[in-house]
Image (cartoon, rainbow over all chains, first blue to last red; front, side, top):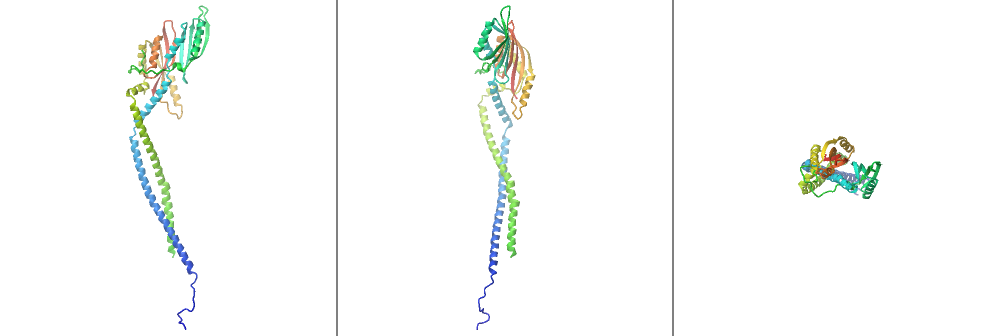
Length: 209
Length: 186
């Protein structure tokens, strides 16, 4: 006979014990993940804080450097450079279009025969584009002289579109009065740059004497 | 047992709260602005560096120009109109050339037209060069006129004869009317 305290048969434990342990494990894993996330977030927050401080310091440093450079910029020097540039560029532009009527008169002297003389002569530079306009009136000794002028102008080619009008032959001496309009080529009135400097530096207009 | 679940939940909420209340706003707000400002400052510093280099190069180029030539350049295109001084010079030139000036005036309608046409261009940089026309009458021989014209053409201050009328006579002394344009740097 066995003592009554000794169980006579195997009695299994209730099945509810195993699921309770599994739930507890899941809670532990969940908690661990949460704590890891919290740790990462806190680390990020600290990182962002210090990164912000570093950036602010860098920005302040660059701003101070920029202010220092800006302070060293001299507006008068810039203005002088700009004016010098304008003077050079504008001067070059003006010189390239600089008209010189003296060359035109020299050519006119050469190609107009002495039997023709002008009573009025008007030369006007074109505002837009190069060249000039010539309007003149004069007297030729005879019609042949006028024809010679017409031929000479055509042959030269730099006084173009020469139109003689108002042609009138005098009954007394056979002289011919006329009016002339023509276009003067830019090349004929272009200023030729001389290597010689202006002689008189006190005066702005220095004659070639 | 309940605390095993509640504390992680609080921790989770705290993490979310920290992220959305500090990290995200700071990153997209103050830090993004600071970074943009730093980029802008870097660009400005780069431009300042280029400016300094350019200024040094320009200063070297300017110093390489003979000061006498710079002086001539400022006479060539002066800073002011100074038409009175120019009239005195023209008078002196005329007397040296043997031509007699009888009347000198400013063609005001032309100068105002030049000014308005330049000012009318919207958005365009104002032309740095101003101009005004002087009209003058003169009498003299043809050779005197040639000398006068060459003097104007070779003037140290740029002058341009825009319009010239010659009236003949039997005496060899002709009458002249001309329009001379003078320029200055505004």
